[in-house]
Length: 314
Image (tube, rainbow, N blue to C red; front, side, top):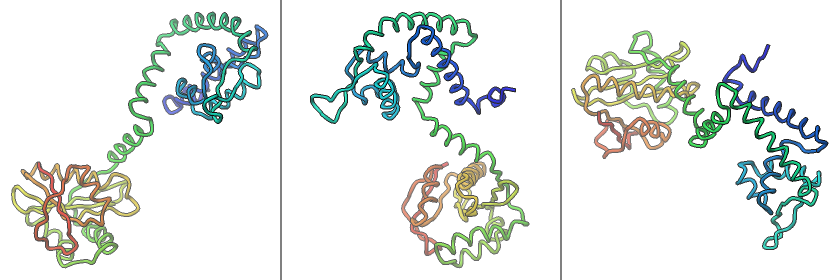
């Protein structure tokens, strides 16, 4: 059983490493058959120095795309094998310049013959495959150069989290959760005010009866977030009572609630959605900006804590 083959894309990096190790091992046997002590992993650095030297560690790292520690390790091994030498730079004594040693220069012609044969054989092997491995690697390198893997992973994982969050409409069985979720953040940062008590104690009468909407976020069968649209007019709604349980934060739940509320407001014919918040709530404000809200001049508010107003045009 080949576990890596079964894992497929999950073991992509490990399988490349296994193939690299296999090729290196068999290439080492080629050098051994000629009685040459030459590790295949030395090839690129040794080859570059054979074409252009002396070069510094930084120059080698930039040219080959290796890290400085990797270049230093390879250089140390090549120097121990007597194939390269290092010397201080005349301009900067802290800088070491690497070049082929006399032994390396003497060995070069024989290595070049072997490399030419390896090039021809590798070309045959690659051309005989259904898919050109070199082209595939070049495409992958270009793709990762355009956007690093970590960045791609974060974007994908955020979307995956969004997909796992279900937004549902108001259900009376969750009335107490609507209140509990909101009181948690209000009491943490501010003082509960009269409008809070009215809306949280009676969402049916304060929000729904006037044409508003209340939403809940369900994640792994648990209600972990909520928000509401308070109707001001047919064209204007206010986004209110946005709350996400502390243990569920960081899972894109607030973002999905926001996006859903905006979409519903648009379907209801709204031209604008606004919200009131406080500058202490930096993460929340950053979220609102990401989904399209922008800061506008504040107006009279029923909440003493409100010191910033934002809106989005639909």
